[in-house]
Length: 396
Image (cartoon, rainbow, N blue to C red):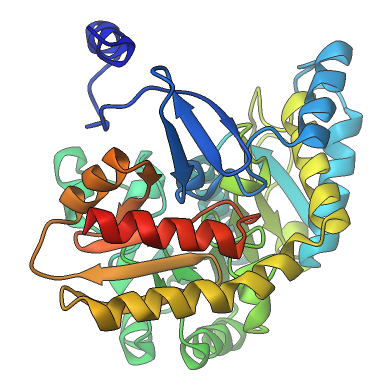
């Protein structure tokens, strides 16, 4: 029996089976490559679902975490800690907003954003019957609140009743959003680039139109940047390319580049008129270890000009993917921004391609039911892209 099968057998005895995992056991990584317990190497074009923006084994990142472990890992939010202050300052500098609340995950960031929006509306009107407009085919997380604003009935069916007061509109359809607006609407939530739903970037006119509605009616705009943020689309946050600033932003994934951490960020208007002491909390959120990671990630982004690199390498990736769509009839479209790309697959199962790719030493993932998703570390080179294309074509 291989090491891989032995570990899988052990896992199936003790871990709740909520994931249909691929049959590899990853043990270590370096740069843009991962290695399994049997020594097989994989070129990683998934980055832990858009998490490992800096790749594996970055020396400055590892050293920052080791240094913090030697100091203190956790203190709780009853006290201040230096890494949280520094991480918050750098995050706010990157987005130009006002206040940060650190969480342990993207889902928790969504929960906090929902609470902040509802508290803002409660403070303004003194009632609790407000509504939130979310988008069809969206994905915001698996907890009850986040699931309630996730526009996919498949994820919701077994867990109803969900949080009330949520309506759904169609992404990139402004009239659809307008049709859901009432005097009770307190927030509109959407991903700047839909991820799990199939890699759909927002249209500029749509995002500008939603922002105009929000400003006119004092509705809060919540932009979910959990997957598309932190440099992935060629800007630190995807909304910056549109010039449409949210009232609340959520981020996670590459915010900590592997350490579990998220955040919701408020502009000045929302921060002043929403959550106060006693309204929200977390034991682990913003602890020194997680925030040491966040702080160092921003340092590395600046020092190594990560966003400039994303902008430089993106045209080459798009060109190569466009060539694939022209070459293979079952690839009908490429869509995405920056290093968040999807290939639409028709007439054959995406899962079959992903499994073949693993056999050929390439990690890619899916989005929606028929999209091959590519969200590699942001440090990839043209040589890495060529290797990916070669392995992918072999998998086809």
